[in-house]
Length: 131
Image 1: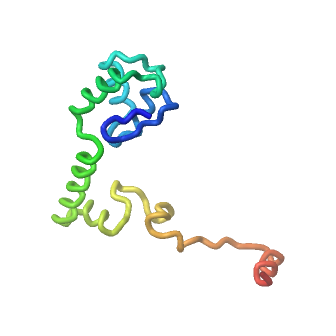
Image 2: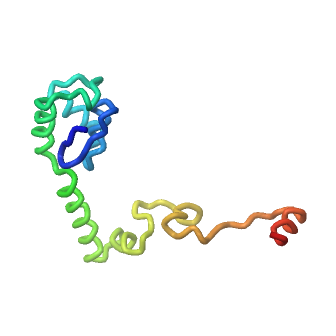
Image 3: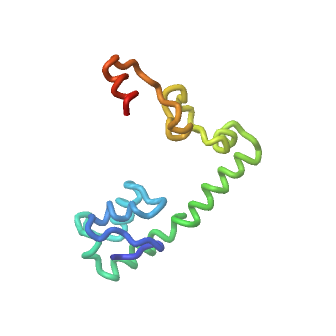
């Protein structure tokens, strides 16, 4: 299992898709990296030579990935909370930040306890009571 940027990438997937398991690497960046490293995109990660892995690693060192990127994102969220912006308040309350509706959606964020109870037949109601 190749280890790139401190992450074990899945060896059974193609290189482009296995690179996406690294935090901060999406499909576009993965395709660019594979092209710059002159690797066939259809190659599986287990078939990479150590030289190819080191080329990919050198290219990825230019980008903020994994721990550094997580720290940057977390610092940005903490800054929003500290200045008490609208987005920061939404983060601290655990609500959707990007303008999504909350009346009917975001059950997981608000808690699954608020479930709508629909009407049921008398037969189903009696069965539910006896259980």
